[in-house]
Structure formats: structure tokens, C-alpha cells
Length: 153
Picture 1 (cartoon, rainbow, N blue to C red):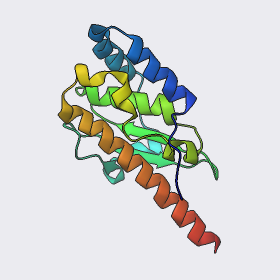
Picture 2 (picture 1 turned 180 degrees about the vertical axis):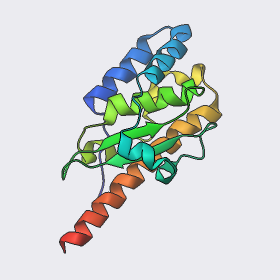
Picture 3 (picture 1 turned 90 degrees about the vertical axis):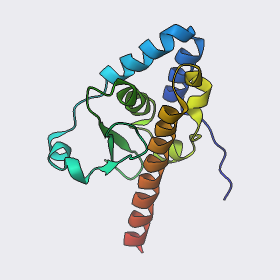
């Protein structure tokens, strides 16, 4: 099956905000998204170590997906406050993708962040962390979908 990659509207809005921001303000905007990352729900906070770690990130970042119904996915991230860039990436993904249909997230290009102009202000190593977050997120969605399908059979 060939998928047509597209960027969901909430994420597209974020991309445009970064793209149109002057280069010196992109870091500030990224840090602002980091401040928006909400604490984990109590049930996930208790499982902290069971969340999936994104080891490619320079600082400890953990990801969990939640599926409140058959279609939507909710994203949860846990990163220390001393990791503002990593938290910024998590905030962008949360605001841009959380609550959307699984298919919309799966159709989002893995490298959507390249359009944001972050490569001009962030190291390639940090950007690799963003790519890894997308890879893990999509894998968790696919695994959930496959598990749900196999239980229906």
C-alpha cells in the first residue's frame, strides 16, 4: 500500500510558526513548546520505567501512547525540565499530533521538522532525537493497530 504523506493541520500551523520566525527566535519558540509539556497522568507516572525510552535523545526522554477509542492516539512524554530542547520537541509533537486519528499521525512525514528551519539553530544530533521520537511513536501506533486487529480475528 502506498501512503501519501501529509502534515495534519495542527502540526502544519506549528511548522509555519517556526518557518516564519526569525532564526534567533526559533530557539525561544522551541523552549516555549517545552514549557507546555504537561506532567504525566498519575497512572503513567507510576509506570515511568515501563514507558519506552527514546535512547537517541541526548537526555532521558520517555514516550507512551494511549488509545482512548478505536481511532485516536494520545501522546505522553516524560523528560526532565533540565532538557528544554528535548521537551520542546515533545511539546511540538504533543500539540501537533496528540488527539488526532492514528492514520493522520502515520501519514505525517518522519522528517517534517526539516521544514521548521531548526537545522539552522539546533545540532544534527538533537534533530536525530526528533526523528527517533517520530519513529517510536509510529511504531507504537502500528503495534497497537496490529494487536487490535489480531484480537478481532
